[in-house]
View 1 (tube, helix red, strand yellow):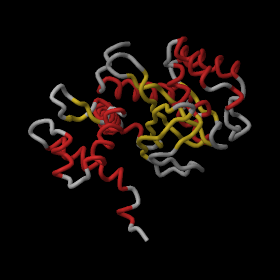
View 2: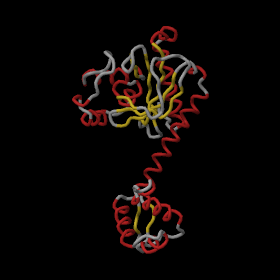
View 3: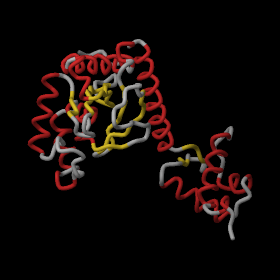
View 4: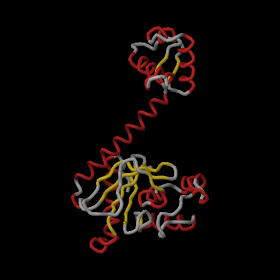
Length: 260
């Protein structure tokens, strides 16, 4: 009976190879890797060939190995997300006017939004948000804010990749159900500057969302301000939308965006 450490030996060997290559003072040869890790040469050559094919390693003219470009892409993506979350929380520190609301940060991932950060309020919402949660983008204020932040070509491509036949079942009677409704919603968001989830995710829960842009002006995330429907009259819908826009601009500014 194999132990848990022996269940995926090829993966463990690949990680050991990456660690060795990263620590080496010069790109090691296949023979060096096999010797230092005590691997059969055939095993080492097989692993190295696959890792080069997958761009986890690069092979130089002297037949030595160095870390591949795919690892750099992964590292950049992780760093970008960490920076985004950090700047989100930094922006919140200067916004005491948002302390009464649940504030969220999401990114678009295919047809869903993924929650990267949440600051829950003491107010009972009837629904809870947590990091890592996924929800259909078309039902969320942050998702629609990001979709509205796309140019027409990108939005058309998104629609082609996610046709209405594959849309999720509505979570409430208020949910968007057709392309025509979604397109009309995009126009309204672009006109007023923010998106509204009017109980599309949960009965009695409203959310106002705005896109977050990077230094190039690309919409990379969305911020949301959530509150119970019973509290709308206390603040006013337009004022809540403006707060969402202001927060989105603050995070965008911290990411280097200087546009209007």
